[in-house]
Each structure stands twice: as C-alpha cells, then as structure tokens.
Length: 79
Image (cartoon, rainbow, N blue to C red):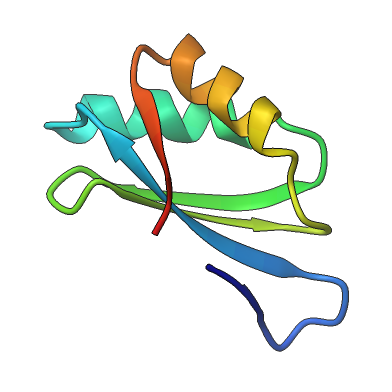
C-alpha cells in the first residue's frame, strides 16, 4: 500500500519484512533502506515485521528487496 502524506512530493510505503526479531534487526534494516536514494525516513518494527519508508518518490521494489537482503532479511512485499 502506498499512501501520500501531507508533504507534497513525499510517498510513504509500508513493507513486510520476514525474520526481524529485535532492535538490532530493526537497525540493520533501517540502515540499509536509509541509504537508498530519495529515502527521508525509515521506521522498522520487529514485532509486526512492518517497515515504514518515507521517500521523495515511489521506490523501486527491486532496490528495496536488495537493501533488505543486504541487511540479512527477506522482503515479503508491501503491507
């Protein structure tokens, strides 16, 4: 699900990520996704497996998948 938020030109997307179980996991996923071009904020929640990403434009899912893989987890898709 992709939703516009109040700031013009900003897109917020919620992804499901498999395998996160702690704060370290959240940090690893957030760190990798934060490096993608256009990402302005990332919030990962291990207990729900949801990662909320705010960006200046819609992100390429392959790039998101690669970043999550680099962190050692699996992108299950959009929430």
